[in-house]
Length: 163
Image (cartoon, rainbow, N blue to C red; front, top):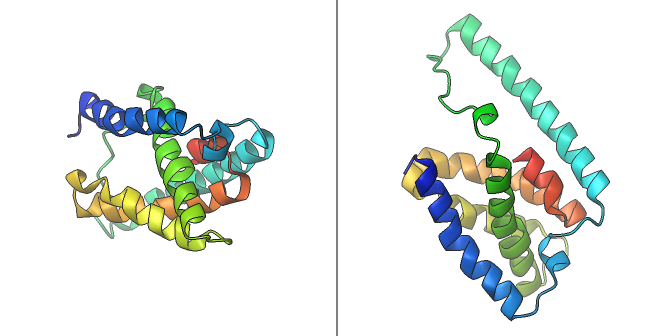
C-alpha cells in the first residue's frame, strides 16, 4: 500500500467514476473547484500557510533533535523526488474538497460550511485506513484547515499547494 502504483491506482479508482459522474450530471467544473477564479488569492494564501507550516515543522524537528524528547526518524519521503505529487494532491483535493465537501455543504444547506468541512475531513480520513489509525488521525487533522481554506475561495489551487 505504500507503493506509487497503489496510491495512483487507488486515486484512479476513486477519481475516474467521480469525473464521469460530474460530467454526466452536467455539473460545472467551477462548482467543484476546478477554476481560475480567485486563483491569485487562493495560491497566495496557500503559499503563506505552506510557509508557516514548514517553519513550524522545522522548529519542531530542531526541538525534537536537540531535546531527544522522542526518537527522531527522518521520513523516507521527499517531495523533491516526486514532482508528480502535486498532480496527485490536486486529484485528492478535487475529491475531498470540490466534490465531497461541496456536495455535503449543498445537501445539508450548510451555509457557513463548518459541518461540511468536518464531515468531509472525517470521510476523507477514513479513505486512508489502509495506512493505519495514525494516518487516519493525521489526515483528519490536516484536512480541516484544507477544508477551511477551500471554503474561502472555492478554488483547488491554494489547497493543493498547501497539501
